[in-house]
Image (cartoon, rainbow, N blue to C red; front, side, top):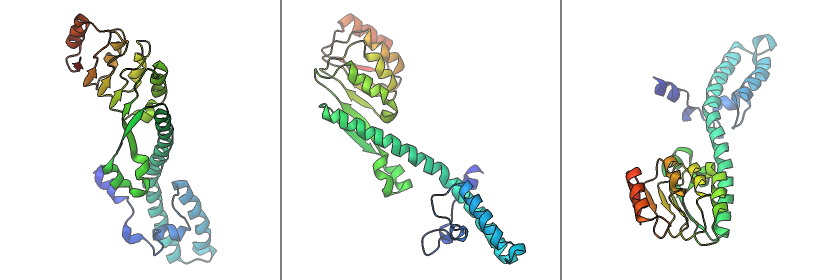
Length: 237
C-alpha cells in the first residue's frame, strides 16, 4: 500500500511541457527546484488573478487548483531527494580534500562508484557518488596523527573496507581511533610496533574479517589468545 502511494505521487512524464517542465509548474510560474512552500506562495499569487471574484473564470480557477495539487506532490517527492543530494555534495567535497591530502603524503586510495544508484539519479550526479573503499598509507612517516585524520573524517569514509598502514609508525595509542571506521573488513598493521593492547579495538570493529599482523610485537601466545577471542577474524601472521 505504501509502495503504491509513493508511486502515485511521482510526476507523470506525460505532464511535461515542450520546455521539459511539467505543465503544472508552468501554470504556477515555477521552475525546479521548488519546495512545497514555494508552490503554496505561487498558488496564492495566481489565485488572486484566476479567482472568479477577481475576473477569472471558474475553469481557470479549477485548473489552477489541480496544478497546485500536482505541484505540491511533485515538490514533496523531490524535496527529500534534493536534501540528500546536497548532503552528498558536502560529503564529496570533504572526501576529495581528504583524498588529496592522503595522496600528497604518499598514500593511495581505491575509489568505487555505486552504479545502481547512478542509474537512479542520472549521470549528472555520478561523480558525487564516488566512495573511498580502500586506503594504503604505509611507511615510517605515517603515524598516529594519520589515524586521527581519518577518525576526524569518519563520515567521509563510511564505505571504507580496507586499510593498509603496514610498516608505519602507528602505536597502541593510536589504534582506538580505528573504532570510528566501522565498515572496515580488512586491516593491515604488519611490521608495526603495535601489541595486543592496541588490538583491543577489535571489540569495536564488528565487520572486520581479516587482519594482517606479521612482524608486529605479538608473540605466539598472544596471537593464539586473539584467535580464540575473535574466531570470526582471520589473523594473518
